[in-house]
Each structure stands twice: as C-alpha cells, then as structure tokens.
Amino acid sequence: MHEDLSRADAEPQLRRDRGDLRRGAVVNGIGSLFKVMVPVLTALIVRLYGAEVFGLFIVAHAGLLFASRLCLVGLDKALLWWIPQQPAGQALTAWRPVVAAVVITTSATTVVLLAFADPLAAVVGGDQAALPLRIMTLSLLPMTLTELLLAACTGLKRMGPTVVVKETLLPLAVAGFGLLLYPLALASTGLAIGFTAAHLAALGLAFLWWRRLFPRSTAPRVSAVPPRLRSYALPIWFAELSNSLLLRMDVYAVALLAGGDLQWVGIYGTVVTIANAVRQIRRAFDPMVLVLTAEIGARRAKDRLAAGLSYATTLVLATQLPVLAVIVGFAPWLMQFFGAAFDVGTTALVVLTAVWVINSPFSLAGVVVQAHGHATLTLANVWLAIGVQAVALWLLVPPYGLVGAAASVGIAYGVQAAAQVLQMRRLTGAWNFSPAVARPLVWALIASIAAGVAWSVVPDARSLAWRVVIVAAFGAVYGYSAAAARASIRKTASAGIATG
Image 1 (cartoon, rainbow, N blue to C red):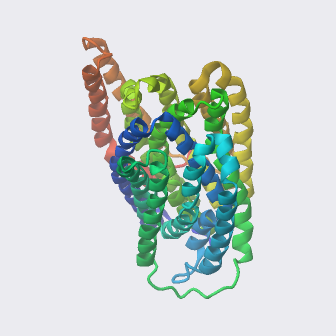
Image 2: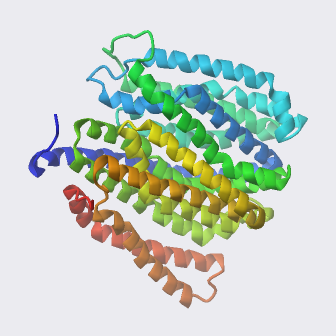
C-alpha cells in the first residue's frame, strides 16, 4: 500500500520524523559537549606515553576495528534495516542466531590473533609491542557484542545508546583508564589495558540499555539467521570490511612513508582524532536516517523521504559549521597542545576537517541507497572510493606528506558522494534535498564575513587572545542568523519540497 497522502494527512508523519531527527540531534549535541574532552585527554595520553606508544595504539586500534567488522559479518548493519520492518513486539526476530553467529566468529578470530601476536608485533612495532597487542585483542568480543546491542537499540530509532555509550563514554573511558594506569608502572601496557577495560564497561552499559528497551519480546524463535536477513547482510559485510580498509588507508600510507617511525603515525593519528569530532556529527545520523528511510522506503512515501533527508542534512550542517570555524581558528594551538613536534600537522588538520564538512551534504545519499536494500551498490561505492584514494595517496603523500594524506581522503570521499547522489536520484526519482539545506551555508557565509572584518581590525590576528575575538565574532553572527531563520527552516522542512 502506498502512502500518497494529502499534505494534511502526511503532516503528522512529517512531524514525527522531524521529532525523531531532532531528538537525535539533541542527544548528539549533548554528546559533542563531552567529546570536546577527548582531544584534551588524548593530548595528555600522548605527553605521558609518547608519540611512539600512541602510534602503536593507533595502528592496533585500526587493526581491531577491521577485525570487528570481519567478525560481525554485516549483521549489525543488517539489523538496522531488519528491525524497523518487523511487526510490533517482534523486533528481536532472529536475535539469538545473530548473536550466536557473531560470538563464534569473534571467538575464533581472537584465538588466531593471540596466536600470531608475535609476528604481528614485529611488523608494527617490534617485540615490545606483542604484550600490548595481546591485551587489546581481548577487547574484540566486547567490541562486537556492543555493536550488536547498540544496533538493536538504534533500530527502534533510539540514537541515545550509540551516542552515549559508543561515541562519548567509550573514548572518554579509554583515555581516562589510560591516564589512571600510567602511574602504576604501566608505561608500555597501560593504554592497552585501559582500552580493553573501557570496552568491557561499554558492553555492560549497552546491555543494560538494550534490556530496558527490549524488556519483553513476542518474537518467534528461529534456529538460524533468516535467508532475507542473511542475503542483505552479506554484501553489507563486504562493504563494511572494505570501508574499514578505506577508513585507515591514509594512516597506513603515512606509516609506510614514515619508514617505521611511529612518531609520524602518532602525529597524523592526532589529526584524525580531532577531525573525526566533526565527521562523527554526520556519521551519528547514519543509523537514524537508515532506520527512517527503511521504514519510508517500505511504504514508498517519497515526500516523507525528501522532507526527512533534507531536515537531517540541515541539522548536520548547522552543527558542523561552527565546529569547523573553531578548529580553523585554533588549529595551531590545538596541535601544539600535544607537543611542539605536532605543529607539522596543523595544515593537515584544517584540510581534513574541511573535507568532512564539505562531504556531509551529499554523503547521506549513500544511507538512502543502502536503506532501499541496494547493499551491492553500497559495496561498489566503497570499492570506488578505495580505488580513488589508493591512486591519490600514491600521488600526493610522497610530495605533500600529511597534507597529501588528508587531501587524498577528500578526493576519494568526494567521488564516492557524487556517485551516491546520482544513485539516489535514479532509485527514488528525486534529488530529495529541499532549499532549507542551503540555509546553514548562508549563515556561515555571513558569519565568515563578520570574522573577516574582525580579522582586519584586530591588532594581532595571529595571537591566541585575538583569535578568540575573531572566532567569537563568527559564533555570534552565526548564532543570530540561525535563531532568526529557525521558524522559516521549520516551515520549509515541513513542506518537504524536493528539487528533483
């Protein structure tokens, strides 16, 4: 049955969608306030443990993220698509076989990684790296189970568990445990122990949250993962594995360029850590948009899709742009806070942060493609980005170093986003972006002019104190523009006018 409803009939649904997205934005915004502490704690970690130990941690963390994707077999992402389509009270259909499959794959992978810890350590950091690698490997099972629990919660349109547990408390706990353990004569293993302890704590909190949202289920018991869920998960699994490689290709390229000098990896890892604060604002909307779009797509409600996607994109840009202004304004001091040697990463930080903001208005189209059941296209998009980034890294990293790595990321994701927008247009018959999407860009342009005027009149635009004045000028004008246009944006979003 199609939902070709009149505007009056559709308005309650549009309000519900906007409410779900707004609540997600509020939760994400509150989480972002706490995430500000992550770079500060990371700076303390680097100063205590040194860039070399931190570089080893970055490489090991990247490897475990890939391993977790391998073990999840795409089932966590498939749950986001599966749960919204289940009848009331049966959201946990297939839950037990999904968990069983992930526990088996994760346990087997953990045994293999523990057995080969010594040769792996010789590749990334020498014999002294073997014990930290083994300790961090023990976090693999908690990592995968946490992902499943949070995916189930998000399938109910609850972003809170993911934002609070995975994106806020987990990184804070990793850094916090690392700082607490360093004084206990654990200079080489404290960060690894803290990492594993933080993931165990995250698993416990995720389970409690999951239990509250799923107190009782009438879902029928099944002995195996349903074929429909399995057929969706398989290409998503390949896409997630490929995406894990894509997300770390720049780090691996810098490691190869550094010729074994983990200090360079540590510096670039710091750049990635700070820039990801902006990227995560957009990525936090992925599960919510996927769940919402899967529900809308099943009912073929095109107007709802245009309104929901436009509103989500507007919220993302409105949140990211002021964060970008802060990072651009204070990039030199942010990097020097980690140590004098980190100053070489300043330009790379600005470039990588700008990349994620520029990419945001278009990359949500990929979520729409995935939510419409086209998992194979999602996989093809990742491979496209991998191919483009491999060429860009090969051409740009040797002559331009860290800046070349950041620019390569921008080129690859830009090509991928363009492909995703075209695919969305073909699948849905519309571009699905309303004029409201451009509003935050207008606010940012006006605020940038104000910041430029402040730059031209302050006595010393390079000093920290006057940089505060310049950034404050941007923030004041941006905030005023956003507040003045709020009613207009809501009205435009309600109309859900697509430009296609």
